Structure formats: structure tokens, C-alpha cells
Length: 175
Image 1: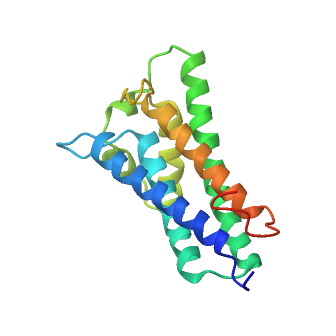
Image 2: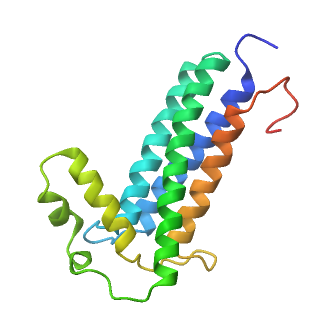
């Protein structure tokens, strides 16, 4: 085996491809085609997926040795775990509780985020809105948008986990 393991390249390419396909799908199908506004959960998911795509691309282009790949893997693992936690909490909150959504859920995201000056306040407001506001139902194979986000983050979580575990030898394409 060479000093730079080709298995990492395959997983980084798979992660990058999945992120790009999911991002294009979110833009084309999960937001309003006229106003280009999506729900807060979809917006924060797009942000997490785009950040993961950038990290997968950098890891693919840089192709460092095992230690460097694990650093990229930890960052992607953290992003996918955050997306998984946010989406799971959103699904749990809206399945257990049938209250009406807060009044700010009816406002566009730009108006909601325009009140905040700092980026950390905007991200906090977006995460709170992602949990509180319901997602419009966009069905793909009978799954709503929140369930689709959950499946995406589970997939990214598994890819990141496979990058993190130690590979002894090149056993096959994705094994």
C-alpha cells in the first residue's frame, strides 16, 4: 500500500457526491421555486451539507496521510452528528406535540435573521427556528423533508465513521 491510502479518496468522493446531490435536490425540490425560501430546518441542513461538501472536497484534493484524513473525518463526523441531533430533535418535538407553531414561523427567514447583527446570534436563531417551526411535507418515497434530512445525515455519519476507523489494507471498493 502506498503512503497515501486510496480508500480515503473513495470515501471522500462518495461523501462529496452525496453532499452535492443532496444540496442540488434541496435547492430544486425543497424550497419554494418562486421565492427561493425554504424552512429553517432545510436551511440549516443546507448549511451543514455545504460545509461537509467543502471538507470532503478539501480532503479529496489534499489527500493527506491517515492522521490528516482523520482530522477531516472528525470535522465531518461532528457536522453530521450535529445535523443528526438537530433533525432527530425536530422529528421528536413535532411527533410528540401537536401545538400550533410560534408566530415567527410564518415570517420569511430573511426577516427572522435580519433582526440579528452577529453571525452567532443568526445561527442560534436559525437553529431555534429549525426545531420550533414545522417543515412543509415534501414527499420522496413517502418520506417528508425532515425524514429525508435524517437519512442524509445518517449516511454522512456512516461515511465519516468509515473514514475514522483504521484501515489495515485495501480490501475492496467500499469495505
